[in-house]
Structure formats: C-alpha cells, structure tokens
Amino acid sequence: MKQFIYADNAATTKVAPEVLEAMMPCFGDVYGNPSSLYTKGQEAQTLLQGAREKIASLLNCKPTEIFFTSCGSESDNWAIKGAALANAKKGKHIISTKIEHHAVLHALQALEKQGFEITYLDVDEYGIVSAESVRAAIRPDTILVECMYANNEIGTLQPIREIAKICRENKVICFTDAVQAVGNVPIDLEELGVDMLALSGHKIHAPKGIGALYIKTGTRVSTFLDGGGQERGRRGGTENVAFAVGLAKALEMAIAKLPEMNKVQAMRDRLIDGLLKIPHSRLNGSREKRLPGNCNISFEFIEGESLILLLDMMGICASTGSACSSKSLEPSHVLLAIGLPHEKAHGSLRLTISHETTDAEIDYILEKVPQVVDRLRQMSPLYEDYLNGKI
Ligand code: PLP
Image (cartoon, rainbow, N blue to C red; front, side):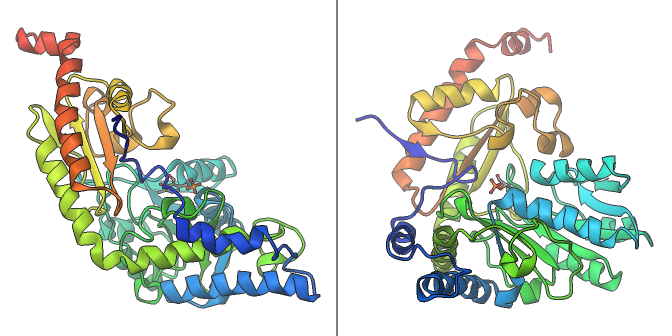
C-alpha cells in the first residue's frame, strides 16, 4: 500500500472533523448577516460573539480585545502598519528581528519606504533573540517592538515575556507573531504581557482564511479596513462567522491537547536523534527552546528541493524552509541568520509533526530519509569533491 505521511504541519493542517461539524450550521440555517437586527442576523451574531468569547477565555483576555482577520499575514500587517500609522507622531523607529516570517518582514519593508527606520536584531546560533539586545536597541523614537513567538522554520521559541517586560518599562508597544506558537505551547495573554498577538486558523486544524489579532485595550493602532463598522469599527467587512466558529473550536481542541504534547515531543526527539545519525548532518535551532513538533536538519552536499521531491515520491510531505519561500531558490534567511553558509542552508529538511503522527510513521521517515540523502549524495559533484579531498 502506498504510504502517505503528512509531516508539514507548520505549512498547514487538515481541518479537524469536529471543527467542520461546529461550522456546518453557518452553511445551512444560520446564514444571516451578524449586523442585521432581526432574529436571523442575531443568530449569526450570537455564534460570532460566542466564538470571540471562547477564544478570549482560552487565551485569557477580554472578548473586546479579539479581532477576527482573514489570516496570520493580515494580522501581522494590521499590527505593524496600524501601530506605525497611529504612533508616527511619537517616532518612526521599529525593532524586529532577522528571522521573522515574510508577512512581517515585507510589512516592515513597506514601512521603510514610507520613512520608518527598522532595526533588525541578530539572533544567536540557535536562532534566539536576546531580550537585552531589544533593550539596547530601544531609542526615544522607538514606537514598536515586534518579535515572533516561535520560528516557522527552525521552531525556536523566543523570550517574549522578557521582551514584553522591557517594552512596558520603556512604554513601547510589543507585538508578537504567534502564528506557529498558538495551540502548540501554552499562552496566557495576561501573564505574557504583550500588547498585540497574531494567530492563524489553518495552523491549528481550522480552515484557511481565518486569523485573529489580539489588541490589548488602550493600544494605539489604526483601523485596518474601512467599512461598515464591523469588528468594533476597526476591520470592516461582513464577518466570516463560520470560520470564526471553526477557529474557536480548533483553538479549544488544540489547548485541550496541550498536556499530551510531550508525546509529540518524544516522537520529535526520536526523529531528530535518528536523522542526526546521518553523517554530515546538523540540527538547526535550539534543542530545548523549540516547538514540540519541529525538526529541522541540514544535510551537507545535497539540495533540499531534490530531497523534498524524492520524499514526496515515497509518500512523505516535508519542506525545506517555509512554504511561502519554497518557490524561491534563495537560501532561507532564517538559516543564513543563524550562521549557516549558503551551501549548508540549501540542504535543509523541515519535518513538522502533530498529534496525528504515529510511531510507525516516524519509523518510516527514519528508514527513507537516509536512503534519499545517500542517493542524492551519490549524484552530488560536491560530495565527490569531498570524497576526493578537494574540499
Ligand atoms: N507568521 C508565521 C510565523 C507563519 O508561519 C505564517 C505562515 O506560515 C504566517 C505568519 C502567515 O500566516 P497565514 O498563512 O495565515 O497568512
């Protein structure tokens, strides 16, 4: 029987049957516009409000602080551009890091063209930003600090609580892109202390096309989409009630499963240890401060793209770098930022597993990846040079 193993959960996830079931009434009877005053509209409004309240209670914030968006990228754009626009009179300096997702990096680059100055902080060899480097970079004209909670490529977890504390002490807005972290690690917004946090549904078994932005009460952020007053007048557009309901259900399920994350982590560790037995391999990112399902390994002398295609033929879905950059042949900016030379950055493999991954699947991956790496090395001129002592 042909194998099919989905090991690319950081790219996206399958919609959970329970999520689909929760959304179904919105595709049937509950079709009203939540802004309509009559009963049919109010039925939809009740579901929408219920979803908002559930998400707020799961993340420990107020329902009025949760704003639905269409995806993580929109949440990132809103937080960054909205904070910049609303605070430009105070200053035009923003701090971020070199390993952010392109939704953040490109939003920041757009602001640079409008006269904002961005400091992109370095990370260490494990991809971790030091909170003290944030403190050192803050200036009187700094208005925003943005740092991702967990990296999408190498899974590294950042010291967000410390960074948020430094921001509070300096009266600077703190935003975290937590698209990869929400549902994979415990998050309590009150305890975390950030002013804004972005999340996305399709990473946690909700559909593609829904995200949310947490905006702490009192945070100065401009309206993202002018429209009919939806989302408390800050993000116009008739709300996607079905997907908001799906997001709330997916988050509830992900958080309920957090205590079992140690099983995912144990499988991930077996995967990492097994793959590191392949000669000339290295783990990218921190061993300890890492998302429970993330394994990112570089293999010298081979191309990640070829690895992905051969693994696909064996029924394994994996990735090299982030899904968004997989169409480009540029090496990953994240791997370059942690100090990998171009040739090593090219040969990286990201496997991201979930609760649905089985031990038998890990065995299969551990059997196939060494074979594929070996096959590619046999064809690699670089490997031949290495064997002949030329490099
Ligand atoms: N931020 C991070 C860290 C991500 O991993 C992603 C998606 O891969 C995004 C933002 C963008 O989210 P979306 O695909 O929902 O736009």
